[in-house]
Image: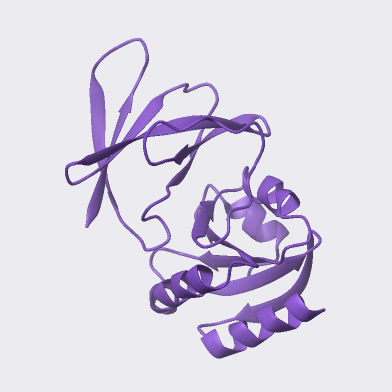
Length: 189
């Protein structure tokens, strides 16, 4: 399955399509970081279905999230449960702060990592079952390297569990049972 992303400037009607593979974390809701200077609109197209992407202010940059039909842009970062939300260096901390007392589980992965690909559907399944926890995903690519370095990532996948904005637990490697135990420990503390 692929998503066709058309990026168009408000000044022209021309668009430049790009193809992006659909990861389980990105299906249904897509989070993209768009530089404020670019001021572009995105259209996410999957098959015959098209959904608009509404800009959202977060920090000094704009972010974009999809919605079912027309999306009203929230004024602050939103911590969503029941799904995995893709974050970037600019959206991560505002979402952790917005989560309040809810535990936040961050999956730090790379596109080329085999164990990361094995964990992705299991992580998605966990997010759909546990609505008391916010599940986030961070691609440790060049753009997000400052955040990965700040969080002390040395191996992927690494899962950090935050409570009240601080790291409470960490699990490295593709260990789904250990991750589930760590999440339960943090929830009960």
